Image (cartoon, rainbow, N blue to C red; front, side):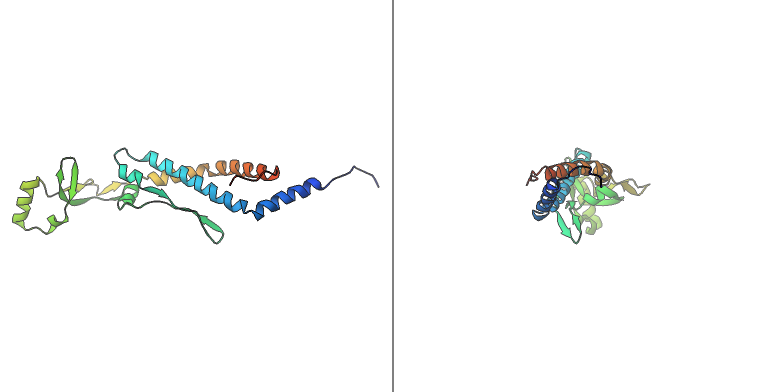
Length: 182
């Protein structure tokens, strides 16, 4: 029988211990949660950069939720609780809005709908109008801006590159016996 050389298993045992330690310390779960949080924050930055300059409140209200685990899946939400956020994102039907202008600000006034003919004349004399039409009457639709949709498509396109880089860093830390950052 030929002798090819000697082989020491200590390095493999040390590597196996490093992986076992990483499993015991829930390193993978922490890695997934941190990675998803980072991707959500990148998405949030992209969404806010796409916002129009005059949408300050809409821009400020974007939020990132917590990472939650449901079965084998991890979920993180990016959301905006403003009532009109979905209309700016996806578009809306053209429509008339009751109210009046005070300087540069439109004041929504639902009571205009229920005014009598004489009261409407008085309202119009006082404020100059009974409301405004939002959108194009001929087309009947106001297009959305798709800030979130486009941003998420960009993140999904770049996700494999980010994930590969982070996985390499994690494996290097585990294999070199350095504990991953907490």
